[in-house]
Image (cartoon, rainbow, N blue to C red; front, side, top):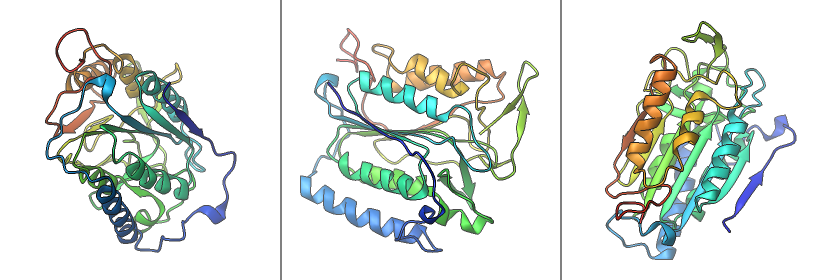
Length: 303
């Protein structure tokens, strides 16, 4: 039986807005801290694999961090927590050791990302799923904790998590594969916004208007999936408890024998059709091996 760890936050406190190791430059300190810790962890387990092949599915060590942020002070979202819970349950059923985090503060968000890199360093498959607000600032992408209140673009790096740094740290691990799924390309949560869907309904949608998130190239052994294309926006959902992207992801994630690239292609087609191409998911892949989330019955990636 695989482990599902759930961490919920009952309340928010202003004093927890910034971890002790943050200052106004934010990113440089996070980068040094995570890089040093990761280098030590990699050395301690003696990783020396040059390839990125994944062992047979039933033998693979699989770890996942799933985050759903919805209770934003100024711009709450409807579906991220339900999205995260459903994805966490599905991944657990597929043999992953899963940590589920809900409505994370800045301290909790940064620490959960840092700790995941360290604890999953010897895993064969590492997955991050994030649902919530995301913004870009000066070409870099940031995941927003629920207690963030930046007053200007300059304050975003010190009050959020740089997803590019997280992906870079995963890319330094020379074994297994990384899958980063971001349902986070929403409009600016500090301004609010709606989009008219193909059926005429006005829907709240989750990035910074009008630019969405910036392009992020996956390092070797990594696939990064966005719920919409760079510069696009993602719908938060019209009902049924899930965002449009999460709905199609959940519908395809556990398909037996379906290669990961084909799985994300199905998600892209489904979302694009449902939104009349108002939202078109995008991914960047540098995977060199085959992987299916659920094994199939042939000799392909599911064996």
